[in-house]
Image (spheres, protein in one colour):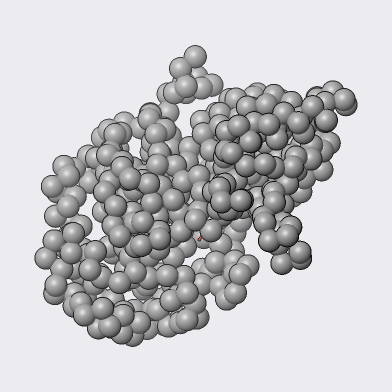
Length: 442
Ligand code: DLL
């Protein structure tokens, strides 16, 4: 059966439903970007104290931008810059005209607060609706929205986008996994919006309740908000017999809706370049990289009124690729952040590399955490991974040995492995926490 006809539905969107810019020429896109970039730099410089100071210090003025390449001369914005103006100091319009704020979870230090004008909220809903259409959603479909509602941009961002497209939204939010499974059975949603790791928790619960996930009504899962590999995509698609579509975003830029995969190609998210200008840089030197080279993603907003952002360093590692299903450029699926990277005896290790290796072993489940310890000034990692529920009781020692061997062979690091019983590793309700850093504890 063709992947595009899972459960009998042809989900490829009709070209006449696209926004015109989705099929515009590169010249048209570039011209629009330049016009909007000039506006953004002027808006930021004249309305936000931080940008006035930062541009002046770097010796640049918005009028210096004559071409898109000139953006390279402007300073970066970092999370620390935003934190320094906590809570509302980065707003470019009076607080009274900001209709909504969201904030990052702030697990490390102060949260970062972001604000939206009426026009920003409208743009956001439009871009979410565009993303959903690209993912195979259609007006009239029913969607279970299992992203968390609240300060996190996932739940509410998806909610308004789905309404904008004309879908029926079930705003269940994250958590209460038993109820998630019951609602899937009772309401028969076509689509679920959810983090990939929480979708795995829902899968476990289906098994626990004796529900066959492949018989569910779900045709599409829009997964994002955390790194996940193509191996994980296959795992999810096979388990539920649906299309798992990647969508990417971050609150500082708008939330979800920065980029989204198209169901007909599933080859990395297309960046909605009419609203966000992407660059990649060498994370060590800050030097711009050419398209195709892997580096840190940097985004500049092109239309945001309440909180314009110039050259935001995302810490996400990816590369820019030419458009396929749309003329806007794609980004390679983000499977790691520079701050997730562990350096173990000189070797860079990302949780996603471990995920890929685990998923190749049929005895193991995709539930794992990595403990990082420092022993005599050297970092050591322990991978704690679950067996599949149907695995034999005597496989543990062999799994420990085999996974350690594959990690050594494929990544080059020595890892200890502890294989544990199904259900032992804590499940996430939203973004999974893969690395437990115990280094300060000796
Ligand atoms: O996670 C926005 C979002 C919500 C995107 C729902 C998609 C779906 P933040 O909480 O600000 O915003 O976290 C942003 O999450 O810099 C990435 O490191 C990571 N991330 C988001 N989407 C993806 C993805 C939302 N598809 C941070 N793949 C980003 C990999 C992702 N990482």
